[in-house]
Length: 307
Ligand SMILES: NC(=O)C1=CN([C@@H]2O[C@H](COP(=O)(O)OP(=O)(O)OC[C@H]3O[C@@H](n4cnc5c(N)ncnc54)[C@H](OP(=O)(O)O)[C@@H]3O)[C@@H](O)[C@H]2O)C=CC1
Ligand SMILES: O=C(O)[C@@H]1CCC=N1
Image 1 (tube, rainbow, N blue to C red):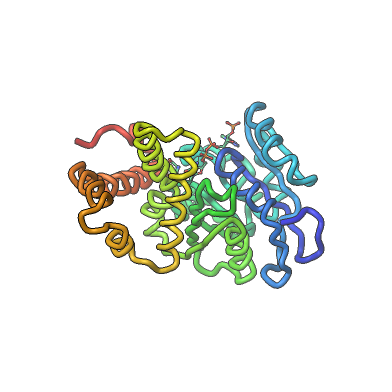
Image 2 (image 1 turned 135 degrees about the vertical axis):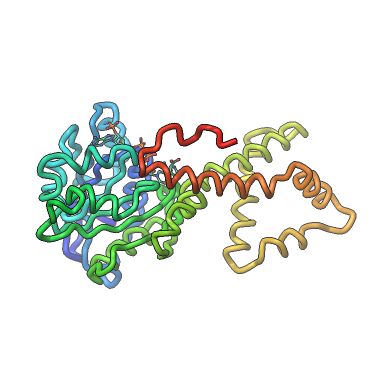
């Protein structure tokens, strides 16, 4: 994405709630240099970032300011930002969605606009219900809602973004959303009933993999490797294994290929199996899926123990 080009029709993208993930997405887009006019008719050339606190505004300026000259930051100015927008990206916490979207004038300001939500656990239906006050105040031109679950690797163009659109999304807008998230990694389109598990796998995934990395690094440090080298070596090894799987290698065959009979890999793997790592990792994904589903419903104490 560039802030000065004539490739496609330029538009204003307003980010309501510009925190960790939104900054990663926008910085990734700005760094991607994706201005291929054949791939998109619309280009987000102007950005408006909405937050409430001054510290957040400063953090947005620090992260995105050096990457574009067309950035406006609004503190407590969601409605103004949405009114000026062609496309809105909602990046607040799931618990804030009701308060933000039921602000007076917000439903009207969002009429007919493309609205991309990256919120965990908040279904498209819930957003429609808030905007129409549960169907009692229909919009004359309904907001065109798309739900996307990207991840924090957006910042380096390595996101895995899962996209679910409302039925009937115009082709031009569908292409725009795909272009936007293709520019920061891979995309896949899935039905909305798979969004919570996608959130657990891809949204939370970087944190789960980081835990594995930390454990591997600690083990190597314990056996004498300097931490700096161990960190780089572990991360590159994870990247290499992921690269092989992305090229079509089956994970179980990859594991077998590395496990020389009577060798060290099978010894290590069996220790992992004794610790029930497989079941526990799978359980973490299952747990995060259940929790994700509860976030949008405003359930409190979602991480209270279930036992
Ligand atoms: N972090 C991640 O890796 C992932 C996050 N997500 C989803 O992304 C969303 C954001 O998560 P994350 O970026 O981690 O959260 P952050 O807390 O970092 O970001 C939330 C942002 O919303 C702003 N905000 C809060 N209240 C308002 C308001 N009333 N009006 C405007 N802005 C407001 C906050 O700034 P301020 O406090 O100044 O208002 C902050 O900038 C969540 O819904 C989460 O489920 C999904 C996948 C991965
Ligand atoms: O932890 C969370 O709730 C968000 C959603 C997925 C990743 N972070």
